[in-house]
Image (cartoon, rainbow, N blue to C red; front, side, top):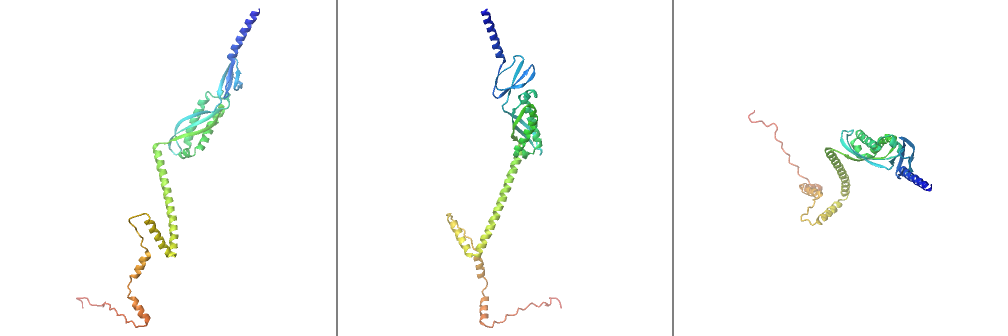
Length: 289
């Protein structure tokens, strides 16, 4: 009798061990367990740790709750200003409701991927090329809202969307390079003209100062000669002052008027000037009476 009890206990222990092994489940920290009993969703979502299910009757599905990084394939489209571009992006999302992620959508990863591609093509068609190149933060926010709206019903939350790269045709790249080069050349010319204007104002002020003090021009000339001679050049070019040319011009004028002015100042009578006879305007023409 005792042996039968021992045997029965051993059998029950074996059956219990097999049952526990069949019913035991382990849910990791970053997972949640969703139980379907005879195909019907159980309201209780199993948390991380050890849990038991009814063998054969219950089925446990584990859902990863980590943030998923999903690259969006490059999409080719035409911008609002008729430029063909290829744009790729990356989507960061996570599951916030494990039951909805399993029940409301067949494959939430595939659904998010397709929605991201469709939204990216829509963003390309609504944006200008300058916005795609310079205002990506605004486009990222718009793209995130477009993907997040349907994803909320799937138990998925879009954490962040980033546009990775914008590929342009080679002809457009060359055109943009020429535009940038022309703009830089324009700014260089404006800066150069502004510098010339400021230099001309300073030179005008310096000329005014030198006109008030003629000796300053000579000192400046001597400083220029010293600066040129310091370079050990074999040829030295000296500027010729304009004032010296004017002095020589005044000295070269006829001086016969000076004695007459002196005699007139002494009170002497100057001889009258000889009259100049004009030719007879009525001189007869040869052959006429």
